[in-house]
Structure formats: structure tokens, C-alpha cells
Length: 475
Ligand code: NAI
Image (cartoon, rainbow, N blue to C red; front, side, top):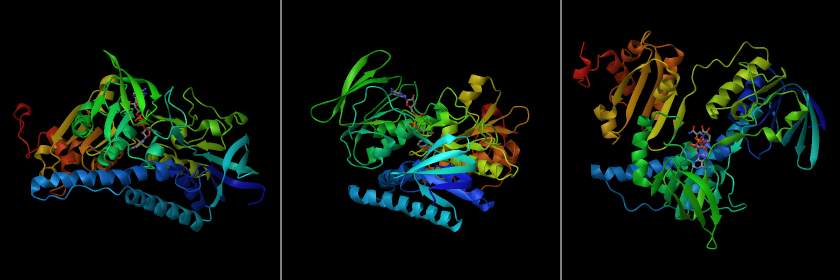
């Protein structure tokens, strides 16, 4: 690439939002430059987030399932883990997908530049490529530079036993005693991975419950499972100090509601949320607005205050999820190419890929109560599902919330194996404005876990035959 270049569209960041934006714009005929500071494409999600963590969670789930099989008369020898092979398996998946994205970029003639972009003005970027600085002027720009792990004050510096989601996925060592700080999505997913790989895991969560965004009744079956796998789970407890010990471990101060105590661990994982990567961009050289939490402010067209600069994904705020970024990326690409488009998704689903999985979309009961939104619900316990019983997943549940007037679906939540896959039907139902009858009268295949979604609607319409609910009356 020339030292000074002018492009139709430059996309900063090649995560699931950035590469989707670049590809969509290229498909719409734009000359696109995709700038990425990492060696490989795919961003946090592919290189050190969703994909490698799900690969490891797959192993963790398989180990748990083989243990469950003993009750069906099938048992295996003690689990043997070759951590180098586990790493290779995970790395191969990441590398296969890296190559896939590169070939999709090549096929579309998207120019990829490995370097770090900084704004010089509302129409110009400086891109540092190794020791060289390139100047890129643009008609349009899409910022998709994501987020990084947040931290807490007072952590020992330059200590590779203080893990972030990024370093935890490298599997450099499997600690004997691991403390997970933060009982959110990352903490529980990676806690379960390390527990399966042999660590004794403890979790400390500041708020009164795990996965604060989800309804507590949906988290309960997961919590029960984690209580059997983890050494301790402490909620309403804050980590106030982490001190290095001479033996290479840590002494951690835990401040609970009633007492403060210290505990020793060999490694700590910090999973206390993520923060937007706005500081790397020199946004002060532009007229882009940033809110008090550091996120770039955008409108429904994903446009910043500077109308030729768009922003998408984690850098624009919560939820920080790959599928939100991808959707926003396509919207930004389309708007920047003059196609009529807007970010008008009714809902963005959330999934915790633990075993069991927890997934929810749209209104939660917690949110409804906080905001005073009227709702009614249908719940189907998986103890009444043949497929769930086969899978030893009787603790699962499907819950659907409805508008008492229109009977339209407002939200849904599922806990159990494959909840993350099952929730898609609820997303479609919400997007299509389906009501309880639409869902209950849709013939679902039997025996499947998918049936439980229709069954929850039938509980609500009182047409369920797989349960007998005398208090509700049967029509
Ligand atoms: P999170 O926001 O889900 O959870 C962080 C937790 O740490 C909160 O519950 C918070 O109360 C707690 N906390 C904060 N300070 C603490 C302290 N000093 N002591 C104890 N607890 C403390 O954030 P997480 O898990 O780091 O995930 C970050 C982002 O990445 C989220 O936005 C999430 O949506 C996304 N993500 C999504 C995944 C998925 O969709 N499956 C997987 C991984 C990440």
C-alpha cells in the first residue's frame, strides 16, 4: 500500500463486527480498507474469546456427560487430560476460522492492513505499521475496535498467574487453587473450564447473585451444578486486595457483608467486565462524542456525531456481544453505502455457554418488576420433557413472558443443554410479533428440547396436556 492513500471506506478493527462491515460494504461495491492491529483477523471473539472458550467448554461438557453416563451403565476409565493436545485442538479451530476470514476478505478484494489506526481529523487516519506511519484519508470510516478486559485496583503487576480471559485461554498452567473474581459470563464459563481441567475453583461475586443480568430462577440450576463442581461460590463479597506471596501464590482479601477474610490461591482470574478501546484511537482529533462510560455515541444508523464516521459493536456500549456487533456492522456498511438500513433489532439474545447453558432474550422478569411492565408467563419444567430426561437435564426450564393484553411474546429464558441454540426460536417469535397461540400451535418435533418452547406457551394458554395444572384450570 502507498504511504498516502485515499479510500471509499476504512474499517478499524477486524472482529465479527468489523469484518462483517467490511465484507458487506465490499459486496455493495465499495473500495474497502480493513485495518487490524493483531496478526490475525477475527478480533477478540475468534482469537481470544467466544471461539476458543467455547472449544474448551465443549471439552468440559463432554467430560461431564461421560460422568453422567455411568448412571446409564456406561463408564469410562479416569479422565486423562493432555493439556498440550487440548491447546492444539483449540488453536486449530481458531486458525481454521482465521484462514476462512482471510480467504473471504481476499475473495472480495478487501484490502487488509495490519497496523494500528489513530485519527488525525474527521477525514484522516495515521496507521502505524511496524515502524512506518501511513496516512489514509477516507470518505467514510467505521470504527469497530472493540473492548478489553476491565480490571480492579491493587492487583500485582506483570504476574502471569493473574489471569484475564485472554491469558486464561492460553492454558499456560492449570493452577491447583484458582480464584475467579466476578461471577458473570466470563468468570463462570472459564471457571467451569478450569474446574474440568483439574483446578479447585472458587468464585467471588460482588452482587447478591451470579449472572446478574439473568432471572435468578434461570440461574439456579446452573448454580446448583457449579456448587457441585466448584470449591466455593461467594456472593455479596468484594475482592479488596490481592497480594503476591513468596511461594508464587496470592493472599486475597474478601470483604463480605458480615466479615472480611483472607484466603490463599495459586492463581486469580479477573472477570469483572470489559471496557471500550476508545483510548487507542485519538478521538480528540475528531468531533465524535463519547458518553460518561467511555462508549462512542451513535444514532440508529450507527453514525457518530461526525456523519461520515460510524461506530459499531463493543465500543458503542452494552451488550458487548459478537452477534450485536455483526448486526450493527452490516447496518453501518449499508448506510455508508447509501442503502436504506437502521439498527432496529427488537432484541439481542444473551447466552452463557456453561453446562447447563443459560439463555434469555427480550424482557426478563427481573427487568419487568424493576420497570413496572405488566406481564404473564408460561413455564415448562424439563422434568416433564422426554428428551430432557434422556439427556439427564431434568433441572432445565423454559419460561416465556407474554403481554397480558395482546398475548404477544415479550421475552423468554431457557436453562439447560443447548439453551443457546434453543433461544433463537424465541428471538424469531419476538421479531415476528408472535403471540402465545402462534407458538403453542406450531407443531414441534418430538422428542426434542425445542418442544419445551411450545409447551411453555401451552402452559400459558392452558392447553398443555404434558402437565396437569389443576390450580390453573384446564380448558
Ligand atoms: P460481566 O459484567 O458479565 O460480569 C462481571 C461481574 O464481576 C459482575 O457480576 C460484577 O458484579 C462482578 N464484579 C465486579 N467487581 C468485582 C469485585 N471487585 N469483586 C467481585 N466481583 C466483582 O463481565 P465479564 O464476565 O467479564 O464479561 C465481559 C463482557 O463480555 C460482558 O459484556 C459479556 O456480555 C461479554 N461476554 C459474553 C460472552 C457470551 O456471550 N457467552 C462470553 C464472554 C464474555
